Length: 593
Ligand code: GDP
Ligand code: MG
Image (cartoon, rainbow, N blue to C red):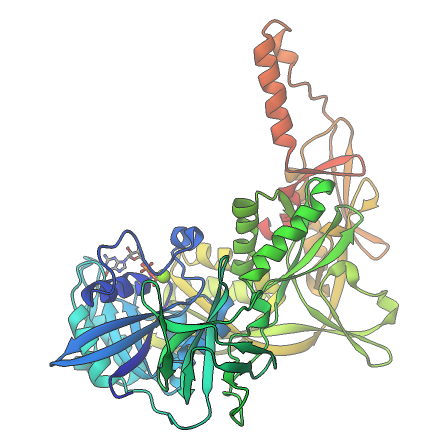
């Protein structure tokens, strides 16, 4: 135990966490030459530069003549996955806090740091990207000192690009991070901090042993789910899985035990022995609950079963994705999917498209609401269409978040205007350093789900970072805004909105849909309504569209090409009554200016 160090790297997105991790792995000869970033093995992750699923990897390193085992536990950097971050952090004794020398401290730097401090982790500040011409080492060091109350010499200057500082980082991990503590003789208590799906081996769960010893073949129990398994294989994680016969207190490893779906393994759960169980589970276990919901519908009705099969497969390795069948008058049969957040939703959509070739329509995302009836019963509603009749509703509550924005002082004005427009209440504001300020807001999650990130980015020219955590439900005056096409209400276009915003939203929705729905051979009336009351209207004028008209009948192959093109153009359209509506239109509310 004395020569083990368990640590993670925490950073705001793009501050160089993965790159630095690669350098550590190279320097310790854990991996040889790198092609891109070794820790992110999903294509999608690489493209987005986001480590979606956390991983753990073991390095061996000799320092001052002694051999050490360094377990690097990678944490996802995005708010949608903050529960996973908190579990990975709980498995560590120390953290490298990486700050980009050209960007300084950002919103996720702070939120991840707070999480690490909550778990009493030893923090090693690392200023990365020192090779960059735009680095401002003194200013950023001042910020770090303000944030941590550390000494200037505690901060390691590094570069994931040139390898500068890597040796110092390893030395600091060994010198400053405490070794794990625990009791080898006590009943087994191992924290599951992550799991992955492997199509040959089933689910592989990653754990850290807090107390006790686990041996291959042991009969084990997962504390919170109550499920029992045989430890068919246990081992440590290098670039590959390395089976072992025994793992002891302080070790980080994996277990394979015939688990078929990720739903059986809950991150945060405790593994113990059936014969000699621990008394208590490791604290902090939470059931993760999806917070953002959207309808996902096949373009072609006959793809419904395929879509179900695809979602089931996705769920095997993504336990936080939920789905249940729903039907829409407009879109037919589909599923209401639950996601951790907007990024998670985008990832699922993209994976459906890439890995399963599923052509789907996604409806506007919404949050989950608590609807109280006159008898005082609460009902959770995930879909505007599922709202009960207004006369039966006593009141509605919606989820709120505590949001942190860090930005340059120049942008405070526009950002406050934006937050106010999103029904935000200013909680407090403090200066991070000379010209940067940290603003705290309490706002409805439902407002963030709709185009908040994009707006924040554009009004701050990218100089604002954002993070949030949930802060419970609060009563709210919400109404359902319906959209009618040629007099027919399109359920998939309904949204729930605050009563004060309903008129404005209705007007802008109608205008946007007028832009997005192509002209057809008849007039199309677009109306917004609250209950029976029409609050806005636009008309799309008819057009006679004959794509082959300009071909004079002569060139047959050209004519065919045009027809094919038109057919392809139609693919992502949905016939609603007699109106063809493109996918874009279902997301119109996200694109309002
Ligand atoms: P992460 O989101 O924190 O994992 O960040 P990445 O490791 O993916 O890095 C984000 C971007 O910064 C990538 O384009 C890297 O190539 C680049 N980068 C990372 N570290 C350095 C560094 O030390 N110097 C320079 N110049 N670029 C870096
Ligand atoms: Mg990364």
